[in-house]
Structure formats: C-alpha cells, structure tokens
Image (cartoon, rainbow, N blue to C red; front, side, top):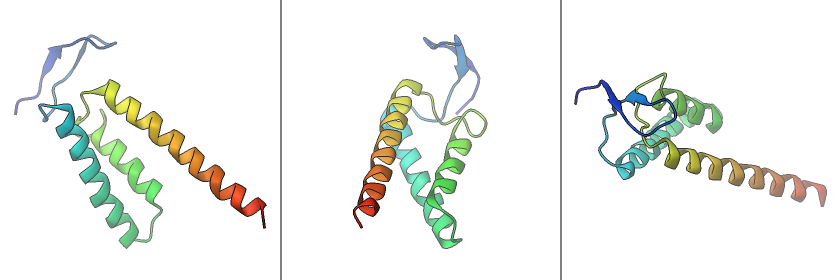
Length: 98
C-alpha cells in the first residue's frame, strides 16, 4: 500500500497514511506485536516494560507509522497508564500490611 501525505483532521493537518484500513486492525496489530515482542523479551529475561516501549517506538511515527487513529490509541494509552498505576498502588499497599 502506498505511503504518502494525505489531508486529515488532525492537529498537524497532514500525516502519513498507514497500512491499516480500520481502527480495529491497528489495535489488533499493536496487541499482536506487543505479545510477540513481549514474549521475546521474557525469553531474553528483560522486563515487559522494555518490550512494550520497543513496540511503541516501532509502531509510532519514528518507526513503521502503524498508528493513524491517534485519538483512540491515546485513550487506550491513558487507560493503560491508569491501570498500571493502580496495580502498583495495590502491590505497595499489600507490602505495607506486612
């Protein structure tokens, strides 16, 4: 599929076209890539967060430019950060009870 500039309703006005046609395809590809690279990271005995950061760099504008639905992915990223912080809070609250 050709890549090039197209006009779209984003903050910058122009952005690169991506490989995927729908938001569902983008999110599915991101989850699959995160699972594959995450399992490779576990096999190499690296923390999962390192693998997930690598997926973000790979799929973002600096890499393969997979992400076009920035609003939906941004919402999912904020939800993921909120869940991560809550999980860390639960872990530390459990350690404080000991």
